[in-house]
Amino acid sequence: MDGDRAIGATYDCGGLDCEATVFGISADTGDELWRFKRQTQIVGAVAVSGDTVMFGTASIDDEFDTDPGVLGADGYLYAIDTSTPLAPTVLWRVPATDSVWGTPVVSDGVVYFGDLDGVFHAVSLEGDDAGTEIWNFKAGGAIVAEPLIVDGKIYFGDFSDNFYALDIGTREAGGPGSNPLGAGEWSFDSDGWFWATPLLNDGVLYVGTLNGKFYALDPDTGTEFWANPGEVDGQIVGRAAIFEDAGSRTAVAVPSGTGNIGAFIASNGAELNGFATDAGVKADLLVDNGVLYAHTTDDDLLRFKITDHGLFSCIDAETGAAC
Image (cartoon, rainbow, N blue to C red; front, side, top):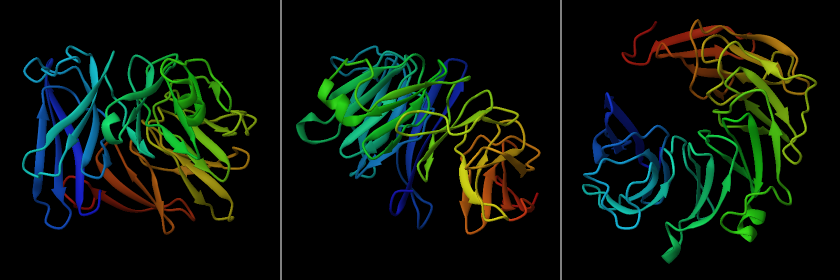
């Protein structure tokens, strides 16, 4: 949601022929406000800054790949202007050497995103420099995770088992191509690839991997807080969520792509009884007013009481009927 409108993206492929659509919908009426199409894939979600909507793509079909100077890239970050509702126009696009599957994040006039070539980009959104890359960082593997940006630090993982903390001030001072880790930066060598967005709570950084390992790290140093990582039976793709258990202890719920939602005591990683889903959960978890919400791969919306982890509501997301 962005104010009085919802903005999203989707794509559909017939073999290698793909069509992607970015769209705006009125939050009041549900009517479509505008749509923008390209022959490509848009895997991640969109980022919004005012009337500017940004999203990552794979390569673009020749029909639309006509901008001088950036032809034939294997991926792009697009920025479109939606101020004229019926006719969104391209403001600029930044080429990448591989597809952009992750969701871009905007912070303080800069948009940040990674690509499948393992390059993490910082692009200006301000004035005449809008669409200009400020700096980039080459990670060890493909980047698909949405980065977390907090207090001048950027946290994200890659597909080479590494998780990174980059310092915005250090990167801006170094400029484009300043790859080695510098002051205030670190990397953590894990035991799996990273897809999920990290979670920062009460001075602890929680990160999960595609082999089901879940880590609690010091955001300043990358040091592990728990003696051993938590573990769920399946890929961790969605974002974890913090909750208070029945003993008033802070705990963290961790989605599994193939099975039940895991639960761990935040202070030491001790495993708690989880939340029985009978299906995988690849979407982010949400805790609100004593309820844990989970969207399963069976397209059911589940609601659990966090006090006893019991399921009290199941709704078919497609039909709205009870399941």
